[in-house]
Image (cartoon, rainbow, N blue to C red; front, side, top):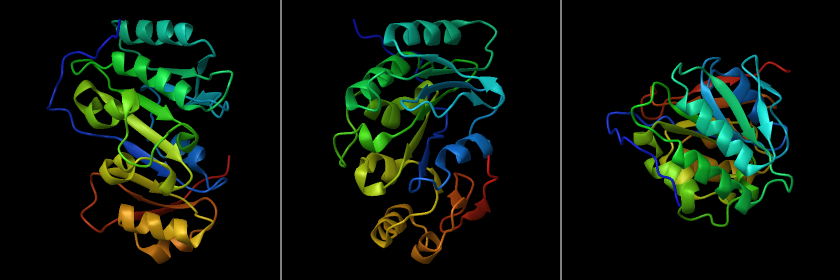
Length: 228
């Protein structure tokens, strides 16, 4: 049996994020520092390499078993209090397409357009877990294209834009870009995300560019992360 999300709500706004940067650029630190996630949020994480022990001051409950992860997530979403939580799936075999798709299947079933809170969905190491750079498919693709109306907010984390589906780079409204080690990677992101090439190419470590739904066309902000 395939469980489905419920209560489609087209009044909800899309709030997906992409977070892209070379290894060591500060991607995970950005998720923790920039209030992409807040203390009282409900969060499901695909965290194959244990990057999140705590998040917003709360302990991340971690499961290597998919059934146990699903049970914990379904229970937390169903709780009437609507309290925040941070629950991670960290499969023993690391970052794989099958692991990501299994995680997304569970998350998709937790969508509810009438829920008190959105479910924020952190997905680390995406480039290792997708099988195409074209259109996103499966339950992962469902979250990206249909998750908005069921209160699902994806946070897609990866190193190079060429390695992930264009559904991410072309459709996600909120964008964080960190240092790129290769000129071609900076050029690709400039074209796909509409940031100036020189601004990306010259980013030092822990510096970033960001644009959100609130920015006018062609506008963005610059910033620097605090070292953890």
